[in-house]
Image 1 (spheres, rainbow, N blue to C red):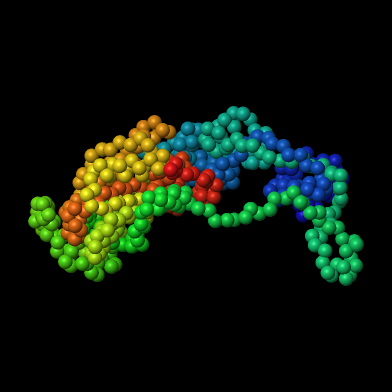
Image 2 (cartoon, one colour):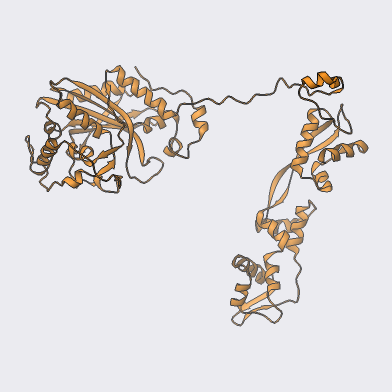
Length: 489
């Protein structure tokens, strides 16, 4: 219908000067008309020139008033000539209409609202607002003062309007014959292929882009750290158990049971299964003793240690729980041999979500277990590790961890931010943690950890962690992100 209307009009006229006026006159939706014009132009049946002009449009509220009338007029006619109580009028009309309508009706001196009720001050009113809105909707000229009033009431807005002027093209025909897209076997057998008009191939048309898999920025950064650990001869620890017992997550690390981190505000505890099935009982007894009374040169924490607290299941709050399992396994081998372990996996903490925190994140952890290790060895390893990531300027600050002594926070100077930023935490595992496992007294463990998200956000210029991980991530970030590499050496 739209195509026939365009071609029929141009058969008898030189031009359609305005596609919007033509659409309004023929009752055709302009979007449909625009698509037909583009199609006809592609076959050179018409010549269409695009133009843009600015005009006023009705907002949603303005469209409602154009159909139903302004709120002040609706409220006026809701008041009977003899008057009405305020309560009855509020029941009679919509609350929003009463609020807006009464305000404008009083301002225009159409009604009076007093203690006795609501009464009319004039016999009848004209809905000029509705008339002007209808004129704007039909594209008619409106006085400037009326436009200012409607604009102040936020009923209209000024927007660009795109349209077309259409003339006959070099291949103009009054009726377009549908072009065939394929030459079939039947066409050849019937011989009617000679009379067919075939659609031309557009060899310059773009094909549908090929959808391929893309690596997430966190995976790219994770792989970089993995290569670094392997380069330094570290073994990967098994981190597939997201659910852990409180014993391995806290107690084995010499973390007291009344520590704030165990509170439900920081930890996700499981309801089903709520407790661990089994624990190494002889080791549990040694851990209990060192907590309650102390041992191995320590006085302990001097509190009543509870087995039911240690048996509670939770979502692990750090991968150091895996480190504790690996060191316990190492202590029960036939003969001790030095080890280098690392892990990169997810941990969970019940934190408030904001631009820098999520309830789950990735933790990178490395540890070295050997005889005679000292704080100097830890500092040397950290200098070597972070220098391979391009962080050559390091500072260390004393810190506190229940399971390491001494403990150090690691800071690196960020050339882009021009300031020192915290990049990790480190320390030497306490004897109260290592000796109950059965490790030799001269064996020490140095360890350090950092998050994966922070360096990844710095690499990719992301300032909100929810743009990197979670349901709000834009897939274009994953598909189009550049290959960023840490300065590995």
